[in-house]
Image (cartoon, rainbow, N blue to C red; front, top):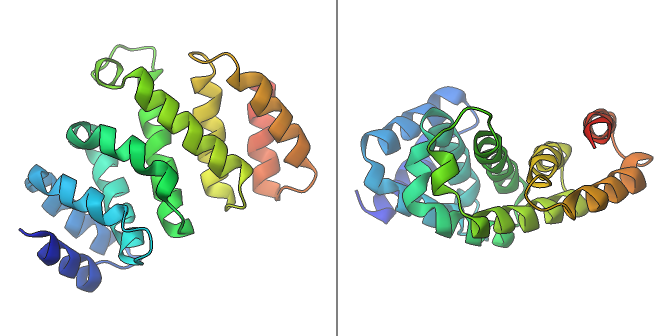
Length: 186
């Protein structure tokens, strides 16, 4: 399948329904060589198709995180370019999934694939999403990721604490709830 054919499938076949996202996700899982093309579409940041591509990528990674491995460098390097809120949320979730697995107590393949540079790229993106004017879901996923990343980069915890305390008063109820949980673990 070409990039333009995948683009058309996303345009015509993906909407907010889980069923439609799952159909394209199944296609990617059946044809893993489509993953680089999907990632390219995720990072077409001025095109609304990037949102649909990000939704599909999130579904795909939730089912098989290893499908991200061949494009992991490009994924983490491109995170800072995302601008559309509907693209940021699923990518923040993918980061959270990666980080939760990386710091899992049980040894797993992610711990050998994810490198320090990937962690640094994710750290930068998560701080940007936490500090920026973004919706609470991306911020909540970023809090979780940054809390765990603080195990590798000790400077993160004091910075995270400052940001959460400064933004707590003006945060939404959901923001405050996640911030309280995060602050309690710091």
